[in-house]
Image 1 (spheres, one colour):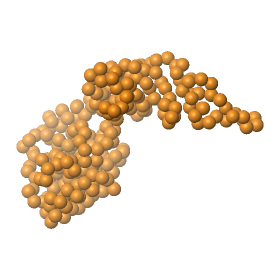
Image 2 (cartoon, rainbow, N blue to C red):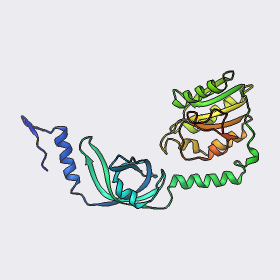
Image 3 (cartoon, one colour):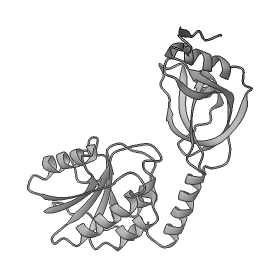
Image 4 (cartoon, helix red, strand yellow):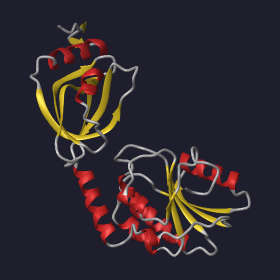
Amino acid sequence: MKAEATEYGDRRVYSVGAFNRGVASWLARLPTVWVEGEVTELRRQERWASVFFTLKDPADGACLGVSMPRGRFDALRLDLADGDRVHVYGRPELYEARGEFRLRALSLERFGLGDHLAALERLKQKLAAEGLFAAERKRPLPFLPRRIGLVTGNDAAAKRDVLTAIQTRFPPAAVLVGETYVQGPRAAGAVIETLGALSREPEIDVIVVARGGGSFEDLLPFSDERSPGARSRSSRLSATSRTRHSATSPPTRAPRRRASPPASSSPTWPS
């Protein structure tokens, strides 16, 4: 389809719609290709005609949006999860209404284990061999905590959820909040530093490390190898909580106990 331009003197100007149609028409002439990457942010709804996910290059972080007809995706029965490495066969296209470039998938094959998940599995095995996940290391949480430390992000929904849960279940308890980065390259070191600072505070009965849900990449800082060791060495009891569940990372196994999401857990201290 030829994109029509408007003449302004010696200048040819395309409307956004015309420009997008022209680019989409050019992309439609490209051949089908195989693309390899890791699945992230998989989104599937019964009312949607297509399934959407992001394909990520673990080498440099480059990302590519992918869509696939839901019926074709479901027929493959791959049971994909974030971090799975796949080969996607499809054709590049432009969603004209939003100008979004993506790959329209025609076929999809699982290819080994994603690099991130493989690294996490190796880390779990290493920490398990060191005894950090042993049941005998998990001390019981206090029935009525007097002073609670909270490691969480600044202005985080998780902070509001946990504070609300504490105020509801343990009104007399005092809470000392340590705000820190919970996402991005500085998050792992910042969480560990804040945990150490709260551990040195007097009369802290338990420390809760909390953040909300997020994409696979958002939660990677909580799988840093230093985090389980720091929690294990802490003289204070620690528990982890997320406002919605996601894949369990090594640090969530190393604490003394793991808490249910505050918004959904029963009115008892962490399960």
